[in-house]
Image (cartoon, rainbow, N blue to C red; front, side, top):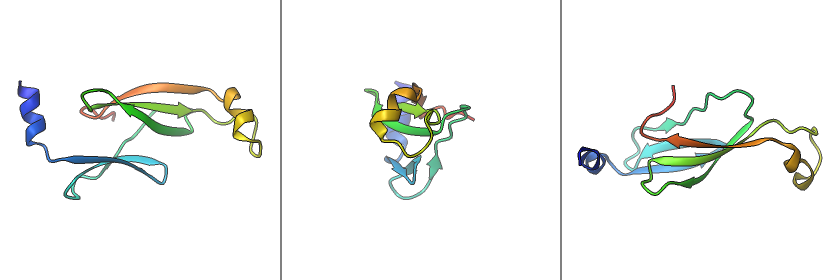
Length: 94
């Protein structure tokens, strides 16, 4: 019950991606926070979906391309290691 009360008192927030970075901000424009991912060898991060209660997000990360630049996505994607991560918005990584 205490967890629900805390969420009710928190202002509405927006979750967005801009210029390749994922962020949270209160609906009134305060509290901007960019998510930090301290995981080595991950070149890109993108949110995939929210879990039911909306405080955990599924992210996809990709390592550096294995074939070098200039080839079509369809050719290099299967050679590039990808990973799925669960990020808890209540407890940001430091």
